Length: 412
Image 1 (cartoon, rainbow, N blue to C red):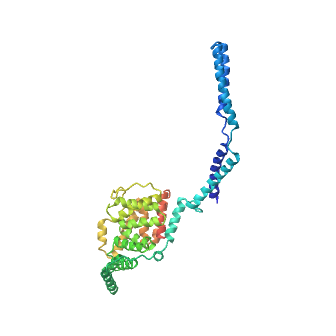
Image 2 (cartoon, rainbow, N blue to C red):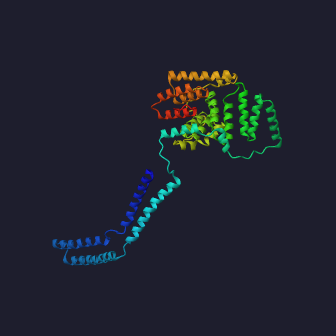
Image 3 (cartoon, rainbow, N blue to C red):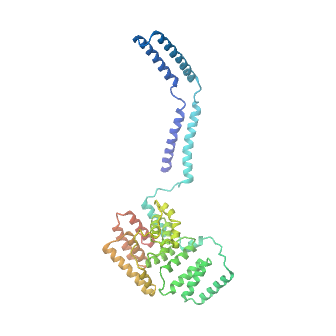
């Protein structure tokens, strides 16, 4: 109510000033002829003075008086006409001024009612961050999102291909422990637009692969869930992305979808930073780079950032410490237990380094996210508290940490 009162007063004040100008304009002030009369009369007095001093003779004085008198008569005639002429109607001026005030005031409030956000309170940065955290915790699940997706027409495929996929389903069902069969089924179900069946098969593949999975597998699983939900990154898809990022923090597709998720929960500032860093890392021809380039300008606008084109692969932003390509190659040869132990080792080394040497807010956030993926929520909560103390004076760092904590379910 206060907002509407203040807005109405400001609009009415501006309209009142305009109305007063219109009303007062009915009196145009002193006519020009009145000024001319004063000048001519002063000139007559000067003629008498010049004659007395001998500057001019009597004949010249008479001629000058005659000319000035003629001009006085003409000016006086103009003055009489101006004073007796029609003036601006007072009633009409008053009515027009009131109408103008009402139009400006009513128009201002009406336009805001249509284009603004009536009843939406002013939100400071801290409140917006808190709302983003709550949105991350309470957003719809995968099943709820899928229930809202309209039924889309299936892609047209050859009859022979559909029969082959049907045979593959039957074979995969008979060989439930065949990991490769599940991988093939996931791929072809996705080709047919059956994303729910595709991610179910991909989940089975990851379970059966005995640790022979990598960041790409978890990202593909998340992507299938996102496509099944109509582009929405659900909490379940987010968990898969966290696993992919824990294995390979530099995995481009996972970083793309992670930025998409941040934008959806109301943190376009973090999404822009994630996408900008991903663009700088490149490569320029990567599919996820093309996807980011098509959306990053809008994300920058939402984040309040002046967007300047970023050259893919520029490498101007330093990469956060993470496993090397050799580490990832070696991880693909490990069993599930050995791969989990490798992740724990990397997490432990990062934790020790941050405890002894410190690090950036992004590294602390990565550690919190990795611990939550490993199920060590108690330790993640402790690290979160330490990080908040370390960055107590940095509001941007605190915002990042609070969002990650909310996503991990450990927000205070």
